[in-house]
Amino acid sequence: MMVSSSAGVVSGQNSTKGKPPSLLQMPVKATGFPGKNMASGRAKKMKEEATCPICLDLMTEPVIIDCGHIYCHSCILENVEKQQQKSPSLGIFECPVCRAQFQRESIRPSKQLGNLIDTIKMMEHELLCEEHGEKLFLFCKDDGQLLCWCCERSAHHKGHTTVLAEEACQGYKETFGEILTNLREQEVKNKEWQQKIREKITKVKSETLDEESSIEYDFKILQMILYMEEKSYLRRLENRKEEFLKNLQDSEAKLEKQSQELNKHILELERKCQGSAQQLLQDVTDTLERISALKLNAQEGISLDIYPGTKYRSHFHTFIKMFEIAYVKVTLDPDTAHNNLLVNKKKNKVTSGSPQVKHETPARFKDLPCVLGCETITSGKKFFVLYDVEGPEWDVGVCRENVSRDNDMKRDPESGFWAIRHTKGGSFVALTHPLTPLSLVDVFNIGVFVDYEDGFVSFYDVPTKSHIFTFPKASFSEPIRPYFSIGKDSTLCT
Image (cartoon, rainbow, N blue to C red):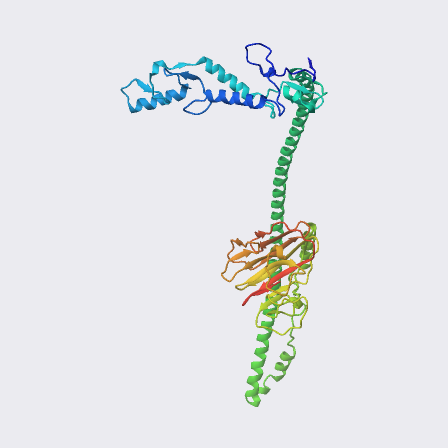
């Protein structure tokens, strides 16, 4: 059904004599339409009349009492119960509004008000025009917008094609039905994709778990093989030691026998020299022959190459290379050492001491008792060990090559330091921000592992092969070097 925009509005007069004008017959004022205020006012008045005086909400199951006041069924019963608790013997109650008396039996439902309340609830759920407060029963095809009768006659929609909302609804219902079918098909596909992703997640978790078990098992086998190889090398070393000791002890016994023979001849000659001429010359020829026949053996040719290290070292470096880990033997850089630090000639030991006069270098630490390793790490996996780290206060780790040397700067990853510290109080901390306490007692041999590409710095207790701490993932974009800080009465060997 088409509704023309030129439909007239009866102005000024009532269409039916003696009856009040309908909303459609009311005059249009120059300033606008009367619909909004009147419709909203009527709705408000109806809602006020249907509001329960007790709960102040729209009534539920309205009931009326003798005085004519109406309440929610549950509200008035609750009020009756309260009154009865105060005066249990009385069967007469007072209206909460006017105090008129009534009996429980006089409470009866108000069906007409109940129907009205249902109508009010339906009206509240209806969409009304925001501008005019009228029901939106028209639809403008040009603007795709719901209209009330006032909107349809406005200048904005003049000349537009309008239809009843119910009529437009049918066409859009078909369109939405097609879209809904398509969306449901897409939903089915999406659920299939979700299911495939879930299956892949399950598969990844399962395969990862299997791979974890496989890796753990393989490395247990590897650890067992390494343990057996370690014992084999130790056993061979022990056998060679026993063999060499036996040879040396045999040589020592032969030399001891020669020593006894020499002492025997020495004593004999001393005795002859101290005696008379007759005693000296007695059997002189025989004595000289026996002494001249004495031959001494120096026991030369005994090899002292006890340790079969060449083959072992070859295997060790092959094994390290297999895991793409470079074992670094750290050499201390004297040009970076603070004036209070003494680096030995081999450059593998640093000790804290009294201030020394050293030539100035840009790399030397001015305010902190620090020293760096000569080795620069710019890629790959590196592992180095610190031996005999002793004393009340020291740091061990790595730092960026270009960290400041001129002031007592903060030492944490943000400042370019990844290290652990032994404090004066005897505790251990990782130099994070804030500091991370470490549950260690005594650690003297520390292994430092650096994975430059992945950005990890880890610390290990070498004798126990236990993990100490790993710093959160970093992003290394410049060279880093082994870093050590040596406090008073402390030493470190690399």
